[in-house]
Image (cartoon, rainbow, N blue to C red; front, side, top):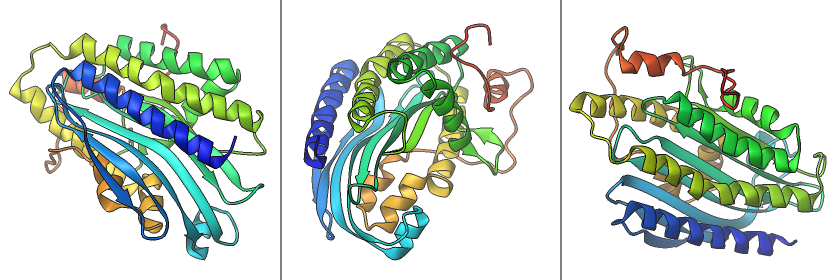
Length: 300
């Protein structure tokens, strides 16, 4: 397959996911903003403000140009030069604190015949951890990984635990998921097999999240739970602005700022020296914000 064919499929993935999410929300409709990158290429940013999705973004981009020497060195690529990057990035912030935040990214990067790779992943950030939901979520991802390679789920699950980690808080962003990067010519699978795996990851996003929405979006919630939701959203902001490599790469390559920062919630909160009440639902969730939980095993 060519980079143009990969980009075309990512465009169609954006279309399908937006259609599915609009149907699940029931009221909201995505607004599209087409943009061009000064250095080459562009994309389509789509944002929804709906009944159940307070703010959701589904972005597609296909950009090209010259990668600076500084950016190339930060990616351990040696010399800079022409590059092409395309992908779909999604972050959904629900209105209800009972429904989790979710993120997905699937992407392809190419400089030449030897320097190319796929990356991506899906991770879940519940405001309130529901162990049964976390297990079911991980089982969906494990099935996709197992279809590609038996070693992928344990490897990519650990990678997600390590990546989606707030070092300054010593806590995970949520219950994790899978994360993979730089799957290229030295990977266990061929380029065609890697591409099929990335497509399968993209296709599993909508049905997985819509099921989690349906489980909890009708539940009532209190102002105290909304307050906790804002605190948890604040942690999400901290990760994306301090640690996320995708945010840094987008800004370093003169990406579109509005699209890059689409992942931020509409409203977040911070309180000095905030502490959860012992024995509370919030404390229960806090206990699960750690690495190494074998969520796919129901006996965790």
